Amino acid sequence: MTRRSMLGALVAAAGVGLYTWRIEPHWLEVVRRPLPIRNLPGELDGLTLLQLSDLHVGPVVDDAYVLDVFARTAALGADIVVLTGDLMSYHAEVFAQLRAIYRYVPQGKLATVAILGNHDYGPNWSRPDLAARVVDELSAFGVRFLRNESMDVRGLQIAGLDDLWAKRFDPEAVLQALDRERAALVLSHNPDTADLPVWQGYEGWILAGHTHGGQCKPPFLPPPLLPVQNRLYTSGEFALAGGRRMYVSRGVGHLLQVRFNVRPEATLFELRAEPSGTAALSAGRG
Ligand SMILES: [Fe+2]
Image (cartoon, rainbow, N blue to C red; front, side):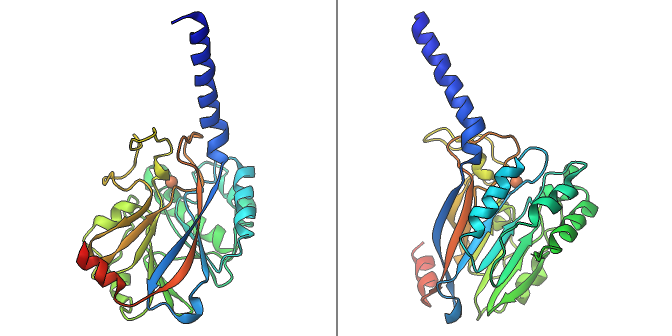
């Protein structure tokens, strides 16, 4: 290698490093997609649902970045907002920080809903007292937490499951109670939950997060670091058994401030009434 080409390689490497550290972790992409739901009430057809996942408010993610994400996504005027876990990364002063930041969380016109992720349970996902404080702090700003329970938003059943790694995932009763004849949607932080034998015939979408899309992904290769057993579940849409489908958000925040080829994401879904029989047909083909 000549001295000049070595210098060029060093400058390029420094550029990629700077990009991975300073640019991409804060370069939010608003992903817009349809969300077809069977038996969706006509009045919800065409309304929007904003998913924000893995904000990780805490010692690493820049507060100004999160506030900017909140301002940008609040301006989208979503009808329903869902936060799919890892609202914080724990440190000693995190609750004051949560109060300062989440007072600006985007509010859905109809509902603002959250579930918990493993990081909301603190060190080793083992502190339910910390999770309870997260719930308290955010509830004060109108966020409704679903912990293995469901709510009804104008005829849409939204079930929120609690976290798998924190050993609080307990979906049986809430899934069983869903009315199969009515529209439903499930929120579950960890995509691995989709592979567990708990779904009792639920057909519909599961909205998840947790992976951050792997945070760094070499072009044309899967991301090397993924906190899931099923390594297919990086990010994006997955067709599952039993007529279920899952969407895994790349998330807003990060653990280490690095992202490469996996931009942070806010997802704006448009609710659509799925013509009856569509899911059954595609399941039959698969
Ligand atoms: Fe996370």
